[in-house]
Length: 218
Image (cartoon, rainbow, N blue to C red):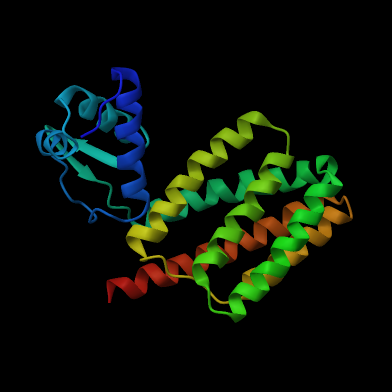
């Protein structure tokens, strides 16, 4: 049973349900029933209702009439999100080339090295964690608060796509070399080159995601 003040309880339930959605806990298109969730969490329906509204705004849930269902993304949805992500993270890389601190460059270099080791050990979960860290450092180093906020929102949807539609599938180790090229451009303080390398990297991510999505339809 969850027991906190109303405002905090709303947020707690929201975070719990969001975590479930991002991890693929619920099936695509599954209907979520307010009263059942309230019973499961041992709370009144009010906080659950507010949490569901927030997740509808996040577009992780979809409401049709009185029914609330888990978002079932189409291939077109994925492409749309990746096209926007591609432009935003390319801009982040361009800005970071001018703003990133030397200590952050060292962190990125260590991440590339750790990723190679994790890949050899076939520790794919760690590979994913390191990839997220790589992108987060570049994004934070852009210094653009609006860009950071909007990109983080998109990243939640990318995570959702991977864990719900393609079952967490991954592409080959080419992403490691792509990260190395992005890092090289950042070290050179070459914004245009960093942006181009990031654009290519996310394009390849999208192509891999589309392939995995189509395989899951077979």
